[in-house]
Length: 320
Image (tube, rainbow, N blue to C red; front, side, top):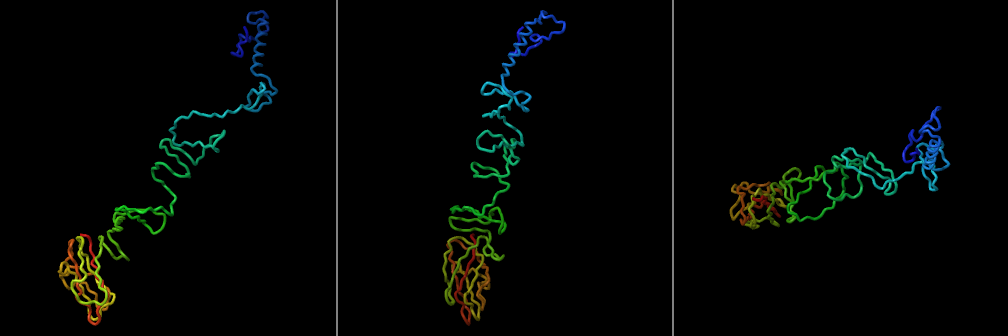
């Protein structure tokens, strides 16, 4: 039977091993058949391996027989092959390393770095830092961020603006707001529950004021500085001042609504004491003023030795 190599490996049938007592003509051991099979197998093996000068003894570790361009075979390092595509499977691993390449193109080895990881369970990519513009629909909150020293501010026409507040005078602070202070850009009005100066209340409950002035020396007179009130208000107090203090006697003022004093208790009228310029706040007995009511100021007393001069009467009120 002829050799089966290289289509299959020979067995003892194709390559029998005679013993000392085997006759040359014994069946399966015929001399010519055995020699023919041996020769056929050797020729097939030589054909398979080819020819070349190198031997296994001179080859390096992991070298293989490699066909050369001239048709010879030589022991050499196995030729490398760079794939242009690989099969990728979806992962659920929570501690993935990210594949990195040390150039944009070329035959490159994939590498990773501890500074960039991916959690497939949460879809979160984590890195020590990110650079470049951040675009798209970004959501979530940054644990840390670089503080900006300037911001771009645009003019607003909104009538219900909140006012930026900071909880310290300096430092890296978050901007906050409070319902107690708002701004109307349509009217230019800043609204606050109260305004203080040096710890003392200046304006409370959105307080505003009507102001009456008398230039020059005071002269006793009634019904001066007529004002028709455009809206319903509640009078808080009345304060009188004189740039030139009265001498010898106090300067007394009164406020009338529709011709009738609002200081029913006349002893509470606004007063600038003799020798003083500033009077104390006087609280009237009548505080309600309706839209369309007329307020006037009376100068009841001007001083005695020297009249006060350049007087101002401030009527402070809140919206009713």
